[in-house]
Image (cartoon, rainbow, N blue to C red):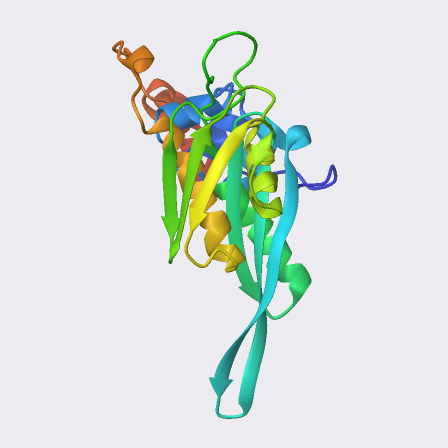
Length: 230
């Protein structure tokens, strides 16, 4: 997160539009599938609501002519417990640098999570909308909608990921070598990412897409480009 003394200077077109207030919410970015290249964009929209947690720190070794070189690999999850989650990993010689890099990476990988109902559609959405699967390495994870009040039926690591995504009731089924925490949380993240890729009947209505942010604000982007050149 940028301190008050440091002013964020955006380096991408998306960053310039966000800082100028021309993009109102992160959902606009997701709607047009614009890649986020600056972590400060996520901080701008979700800053105060975003929580992060270190899921795993593991030493990895490489054999060199002088012996073994040990570095540390960190897995970090970020989420606002309201339908946005990101997962990042970073390898570094120092634990602090690995964690810092993984947090930045997690913010760049943030995705929307669709939530739905089990049975009666009253109150706020509380579970996954459909059964979804995710896989990484030998690990296979399946998320199954659960009735309200069930809670999260998962391992402690899985509960943290689902909680970050804003899901309160869910059954999970996992197979493979789930002790490999890195692969397990990745499989869980990929399953949550799929919630928006499945088209349920209530999404069958055609959505009229307007001009994208780059197209809509092309004059502003051209002006700032000229000002920089001068």
